[in-house]
Amino acid sequence: MYYYSLNREAPGSDFREAVISGQARDKGLYFPAALPRLPEAWIKTIETRSDIAIGIDIMRPYTEHALPEKILQRIIEETLSFPMPLIPLSENIFSMELFHGPTQAFKDIGARFMSGCLGYFLRGAKQKAIVLTATSGDTGGAVAHAFHNVPGIEVVILYPSRKISTVQEAQITGPGGNINALAIEGTFDDCQALVKQAFADEALRQKRILTSANSINIARWLPQQIYYFLAWKQWPEKQAPPLISVPSGNFGNISAGVLAHLSGLPAEGFIAACNANAAVPDYLASGHYQTGPVKHTLSSAMDVSAPNNFVRLLALYHNQYSGLKDVVSGYSISDDQTRNAIKQAYNRYDYLLDPHGAVGFAALEKAQELQIGRKGLFLETAHPAKFLSARPEEEQAGNYIAMDKTYKAFKHYLLENLG
Ligand SMILES: *Cc1c(COP(=O)(O)O)cnc(C)c1O
Image (tube, rainbow, N blue to C red; front, side, top):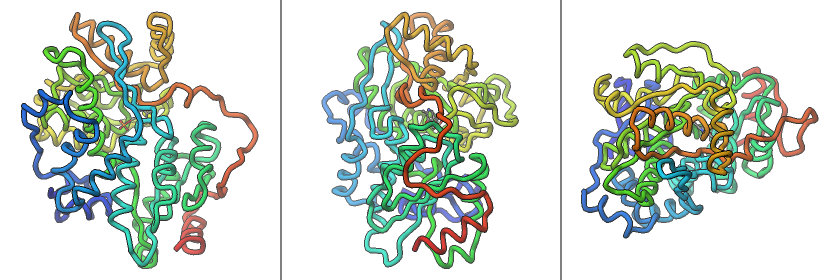
């Protein structure tokens, strides 16, 4: 497969180059030049296939020529090494649980696929590659776990000191070894700015091989399609495809689902389930795209004001508002509605939601008010226990280095401690 930049000002790349560089040289997101189409017979007989075989069939067209079949199989086996059950809450509402991986959030799936690809591409390289990742919480843990002990790779994770949950921090600082955790005195935006500055620093890039594991990398984006097909495999009523509600922040997850749909996944429609950061639901309602300052909510992993992957969602419909809004609807769910959804699901269905899944659940119920009797599923993107703990005041144990938010300190660290 060939990938072009959505900014269309850089040359295209093959899978290998697109994964290693993360982003095209014109800072555009990579996008597949053709959308694979799964045969109807394949979709009809999906229940006869193993999860691994489904994953391989979905990813093969994207990785062809870059990953030999045996390597792809090994990577898929590592990616799908935990269960993803579809749990009925009621006759019409199902929860697709994506939190049974090692760091209890769906980001494990993309991070594990990507670490498998990078580990393979960089095998035998003379110099270690440095994977830089800024995180507001969940990405850091998933990347730390997925890349731990991968030869040839040092990982540097920057997180805002004391602004992530204790569970999240333990997942980042716990592994040690090739996982280097930097607690930055600042915000997530400060962390992201440091990473961006490092990528723009030509003098640094002469001396160190830098790559990134952020969510726009195609090796994290594309494999997310797999669990939509695994949900379909478990869907009980094949003659009535589901409404699919996706708790959304950066819009990588839902755009992967819509990509899967265009490749043959049956779905009645998609729901962009957002918290108070509602740029996309507002766009879907009005046709006008406008972003404002970020709002902090209970579903913190979705506190994104300008979603990176929105351009991919648009590109899937050739940048046509009318095509997109026929398939995707949007809802903005307040913190009060989120709390209420957690209460309702617990009281009515004896089911404990996390705040992100709760946004998906609440948006699905709203959509079902307009489509009475239509069955749907929401993606439960994190384990409820991951977000319950309040942050204690004392410092945490673990392997991390506290650092101020200056680029000078960060660059010094990269040059003196790694490589
Ligand atoms: C990252 C994250 C999301 C948002 O996913 P996007 O692909 O960025 O839209 C939702 N829920 C949880 C728990 C997350 O960690």
